[in-house]
Image (cartoon, rainbow over all chains, first blue to last red):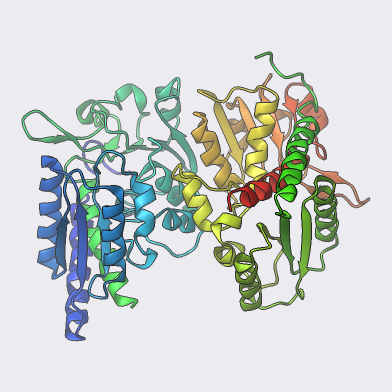
Length: 284
Length: 284
């Protein structure tokens, strides 16, 4: 490999476009065979940025020929109603992929509810049994964001085998599944979090740093060693309606290769959700 | 906490005895209520050391009043036969806990087959969905060996919050679930394995080192810093019929607290399998 260039250079757009092209071709093939690929997104929030994200997902789906149903439930929907909706979609032969969008109404636990998504349609790897199968090395859909990180690194030919990776953040949707994906690629993986006393000491030792916490400016130049590769999973809304990651991109970019926000992990995540949906439709 | 004494001092026997006493009391209560607590161990190997282990498990069960059925299948049993057996036991209301003993016949994948163990009876956390629920923070039985490591550390008042832990070995049955259990306890966790280029450099930085590889002498004095805590999960048969762990206990014991093999993690693992079985019987 050649080392990735410094700065906000680890873009995801090119690889995302390739994946979307594959999805478009495969969706057309399936349509010719009488299968209309369909993704259902269950939304139970009035959160504006979520609505924005779901619209952009539906738009991306539309461009590839994947139908995207947004199933809107009340922002105070009871867990039972969400569970019933997921179970109904799991049983619906017209639906190939199911996403349970967060945030959820108070009292609803995403991982618990996602147990109602049948694993064959669990295109965002939200069902705990998908995570367990992933960890056990069995076939399963990985959470799209976690997979997007690995695909981004692959797209830029960043080697993982025998390298050290620091995953900052231990969420069920990103940090934990990503740790498994990186272990599968033979990286030595350290998972850090809010109780890690000296975060910079840990991340400075890593060849690859992945920030997945949701706090702007968390990763500074002091957290990263020269020539490291930094993947920014954070998507934090700014007051002026923009989006920033967890990495202080300008200062970190002077010594490391950094993925931009937006334009890094995000487009790959969306493309992978569609790719998983087509895979789910192909295997029925 | 006071630092644990150096040497092979982190014994598991005392805590194991406490757990077995709880199991005995609870089993008697359940028996008085008409419930005979029962564990089924499915064995499909002629391996001698496995037979020895299963006999010792059955003996420990007997002492606590837990009935232990050893379901012996041929050493060349097909995966389908194993799966059917696990499904039948899952449906049997007389059986409260099910263990699929390794090694398995060639071609059988433990994590895949264990999907046939209903989670409510999965007392060794072998079903991938148990592992996923564990990672997602949902109620589930943890693999007994991984839980035994944490219980051993607790019994000796080794703090985990904010401490660094190196887990050597990335198996589905020990290393990976243990990483989740240690993260839940707010440790910063590094998972190392055969592709970690400089294992000693990683383990020397850790407050707690857990060796779970299955290679005698893997962890030497050079792998451990002064005053560290070392838990030895290895159980390697010696030529003279004895058992040794993965840690060179004598040299490591001069600078660190070490769990003995046998007498460390092992007795706790057995006690926890029985404890889980009683929990499973209590929740029906």
